[in-house]
Image: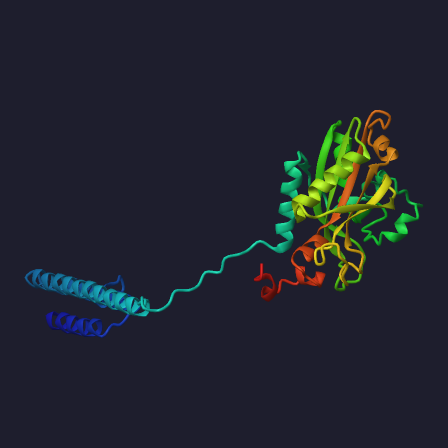
Length: 339
């Protein structure tokens, strides 16, 4: 039995010396030192030995167990060192290589203009309100003096979700929502995304942005509207800009007007961009229709107000000399990196 144990130790040490993974070492441990291993099988036969042989064989068996265990521990440590060396070698960093350039994001030109307009109106005391893009037909049309049989509905190419719910065609519904919940004086703007069923081309898009404004108080007149918009135009385009107002029609304002500003390219002299007029249309505006005030619970005999609506893409395109509205939504980095 002594010879059997010595041969077992020799085989175990040889197998351990050739091990190249912890998994292989674990298999060796189970093979020789496990509950069903070779050493355990030898120890179970010690009952057949004489009383004098048992202590001797027991001591040899313990020595085998200790030597095999020590060899396993040493082999594991060696394998770990080799793995660490391989990992270090594979993760070596060449500090002489150039660094990876970090790309910094920039504000989209449309966002830049929206933020600038909000800053201008906030400086004049206007509160900023945002509302739902999926809107009730009542707020989008009827509360703005556009009933279901009104001919203006034909000019508003609307996306209908149901008979009563639409994708808002303007941010004016927020004016109604604010007037329903807040008593005058009211001074607010509502920037946001709107939708109309337009075919996409260089100047039209089914998705675009507007900024609507509203002032309601006692004694508000057309002169207040003109003064506010003239201040806004000069803050946006410079003190040398001039404005003009042309009569127009909107169902929710009376009287109504379109406001033009001097051409950005020719500065009023006349050019192909402004079609020789020297002015370019910028926004629509007017005095809030008495029916709109009354429908929101505001007495038009006591209060009056004015409203305005600005197409934001129009300002962006003219500010940055962009000739195709589709460039603003295509996410072409070659275009966006210019800003």
